[in-house]
Amino acid sequence: MSQPAPPLATIAAALRRERERVGISLAELARRAGLAKSTLSQLENGTGNPSIETLWSLGVALGVPFSRLVEPPVPVVRVIRAAETPRLRADHADFAASLLAAGSSHTRRDLYVMELEPGQPREAEAHIPGSVEHVVVAAGRLRTGPRGEFVDLGPGDYVAFPGDIPHHYEALEPGTWAVLVMEHR
Image (cartoon, rainbow, N blue to C red; front, side):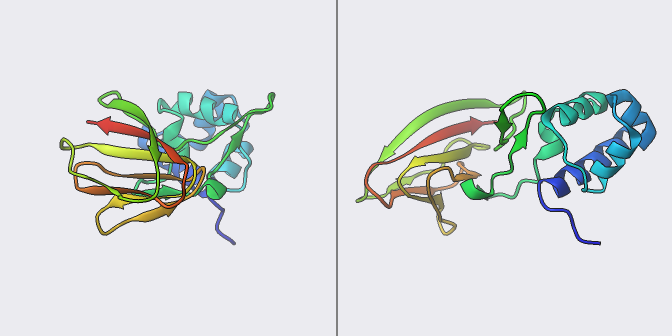
């Protein structure tokens, strides 16, 4: 049997993990979420095609945020390429959503628009402990990340990395701009 492709693999693993954490059967979770047991079984096996509404119902039934069902485990430096961003579609509307990063109730966030031009890179010193930087490139090309772990990004690409260590921002094309979310825990 072949392995399901992300985000289905992520969703399947999260559903099993959260159902087992709550300590309920497949049948009970299906009942609480208003789904057929066969539908839930397919989702846990990574063969279903869940809508946003289905996942939302499962999250409510499990008592977890939607993001916990669709977001894979987070490495220290995480890159999401625009072409690889998992998109979930709604059942009854022309709507798609891509979750990049979920916050917590104990997080403060600052949002910035950065405009960069080629030339001298910006070498940023460490911010307060627990800081995390989230960057989405809107136009141009950007090299960024902690010293020694730089990544090159294009329009729509996303990266997250610790902001409490020295890091780097460098425009690789004229007219580069990006959205930066500074998260302070």
